[in-house]
Length: 368
Picture 1 (cartoon, one colour):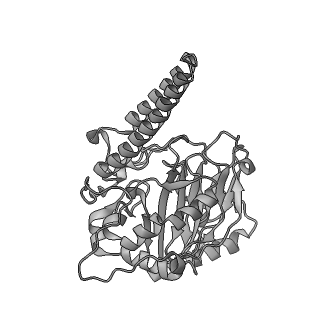
Picture 2 (cartoon, rainbow, N blue to C red):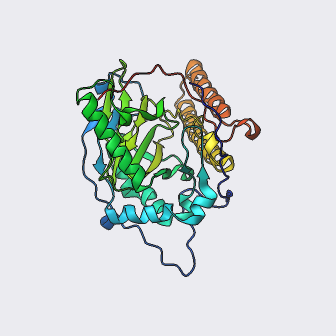
Picture 3 (tube, rainbow, N blue to C red):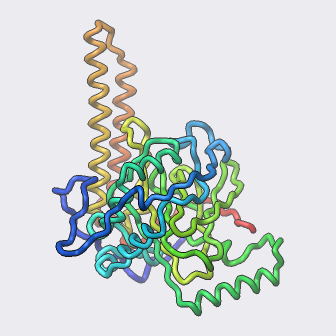
C-alpha cells in the first residue's frame, strides 16, 4: 500500500551518552522528589489466558517461544500508571522526544531513561522481567533502553469523543448487530504488519470507560482472524509480534488514549534474534538506535564465538578429530548473523524521516 509522506517531520530525540551503560538508573533531578518504583506496591499482576502458536496453526519452529499472545491482564496499579502518565506528559518529553510518521501522528520515543525515572525503573525491574518472561514462555529482557515504553498518543475533545459514540451507535442501529461489514471501530489504525522485535508488551495508561473498540486483530497461519480485546488502564497484553501478522483496530469515544509499548528480546545470546529496524528507523534518533542495536548484536557475537572457542579447545584436549562440517556451519551462521546486522544499519542519509515503508500483506476484512 502506498502512503504519502507526512507533513510534519519527526524531531530529534536527546543526544546519546556513550558513557552510560545499559540498565543503569537514569539521572535524578536535584531538589525534586521523584516517586520510586516499588514492585510490592506498584505491581498488581493477575494471570491471564494465553493463546499458543499452535492454537494459531503455526509450526513449532516459528518464533522464539510457543506463546503467541496473552489476553489483557492487570500488570500495574492505578497509582503506577498515573505516575507513568505524568512522566509522559512532561513538557520536555514532548519537546525533545516527539516523532510523527505516515502511519502514526504522535509518538514519544527514547524518553524513559532520561526523563521518566519511575517508568524506566518499572520496566527494568527483575520482577517485571519475571512476569513478562513467564507469560511469554521464554526468558526476556527489554530490547534496549530506547525501546522502553514507546508511547502512542491520541487526544480528542469531549465533543469529538461524544460525536464518535453517537455515530457508532447510529451505525449499529442502522446495520444491526449482525452486520458483517463492521463499523468505524473495525477499521485499522495501522494495516496488517509484523513488528520489528520478537515480543511486545502493550500497557494502557488511559481510562477506557467510554472507549469503543481498540482490539488487536491477529492472523492465524491459515489467514483467519482472531480479535483480542484491548487492555484497560493498568492492564497489558503480550504479543509475539515479530512472527504474527496483526493490526490495531480503531478506538472510538474516549478523549484520550495513551499506550506504552515496550519491546523485548530473548536474554540468551544463543536463541535466534530476527530483529529488524525497518519500522523504527524513520521515527528514531538513529544515534541511539544504532548504538543499542550494534552493542547487543556484538555482545551476542562475542558470546557465541567464546562458546565455540571453548568447545574447540575442549575437543582438542580430549584428542577428538576436528569436525570440519560442524565448524563451517558455525561460521556460516555467524556470517548470516553479521550480514543481517549490517543490512539493518542503514546509512543515515538514506533513511527518510517520518516515512515508514509498508509491506504487502493481503487484506482481510475484520468483521464484527
